[in-house]
Image 1 (cartoon, one colour):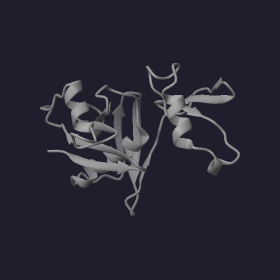
Image 2 (cartoon, rainbow, N blue to C red):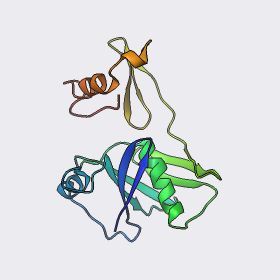
Image 3 (tube, rainbow, N blue to C red):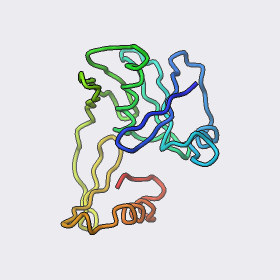
Length: 168
């Protein structure tokens, strides 16, 4: 059994693994996330138990590899136990980058505390920062004139970032 959630356009396969019975290989995760032959998703998350926390977020990219923290995924994963009728005023969970706090407003909006950005790194006139996962930021004067998808894909797939990956 699985659920499928989306947050700000990113979609995820989510599996309740609180019983600890689910163990998926990289290939199985990749197949589940495949948009042509699987469920299709940007990533897969397991809702695990963790001592001292409401749950653990285990996040995998669509290529099947465990990945860094994903804010949109984290918000979806908080909503998942809520929809399982585990209602709380606030949730505290652990992810690969450490602990996170989250709340669900009366209208259902999930607010998630990400880790503080520590330091900015200049890169070719742009900026790289870490919010739990690396982000590449380019300032643009006329955003509507910029092909964000094309430019972002070119940066993400450049030799400097292809191996480790980066959000653009």
